[in-house]
Image (cartoon, rainbow, N blue to C red; front, top):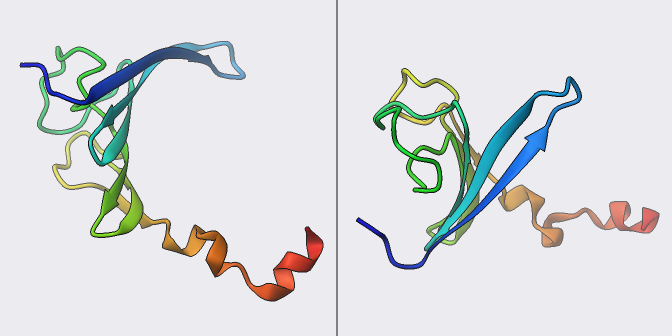
Length: 102
């Protein structure tokens, strides 16, 4: 079933060892997911196609006014392995002393 407001950008990256991987960036409502060929998360069928937004091991989302990164770093674990708030990375959080170097 197609989901409204879903946008998928397909691309390929090549590592410094020459290995290439297909990646898909999926924009869906309040989140951006990054899917990678050969990677998945716990509850999704491994035959699911890239570009659906549901196989992503990495997601950036706006949650209750907070921007955060969610990572499923273990395919055998249902819950995310990492939830990282980006609130400390806001420009408004920079210490005034640090601004002198710019």
